[in-house]
Amino acid sequence: MRAESAHWWIGLDAWIIQDGNYGDFSSGDRAEFALEFFPMGDVLPRDSSSISAVHLGDDVYDIVARVVHTDHRAWVADFGLRAYNQSRLPAGLEVGSMIGARVGLGVDPFTYFERLSKDGRFPDLVYTWDVVGIQQVMARWVLRGKTWNRDEASMHVEELARTNAWTDDGSHGSYLLECALRAMPPKRTSSTAIT
Image 1: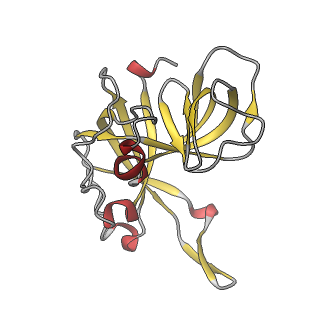
Image 2: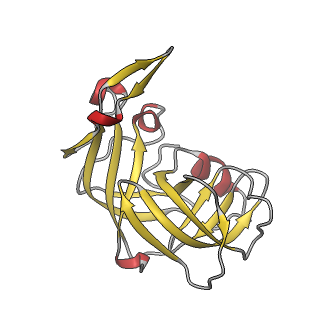
């Protein structure tokens, strides 16, 4: 996958906007943000020299990536884009290791632009995007034990022109941003993030 020409599906939860980290997003916006990734299972060593990302649906990708940075706060993988995971690198891996994993991609809530970007050892991770489309993930809420959870059987998406984090889905909105990556090098600062 050539990152320069790809459309990427990136998750965004309403709380990230509600916390004052970004304003609402609209289709057609130019936006700047880093990516956080969330392994959905084991991160395993791979015997490969080629990086890739295959979109599986929603914000989920199968990646083959190179570890490009690690410390006690987070590690960074390069799979055509560079993204961070806010945990320790799994045992047996180090900078330069090739990995394979299924991951979810999300908009950096604040960790990179408020903290990690201030450390010059972390790579530049803020990309410039064109927001091509927005979907809201919808499902009924059901009580399971003492907690409310989404009913997987009623899961569906609705197209939106704009997020409204304070009212969408009773202020519990969960979004998918379809983004086209601009052919610009990543940087450390974001004009979209509210700092």
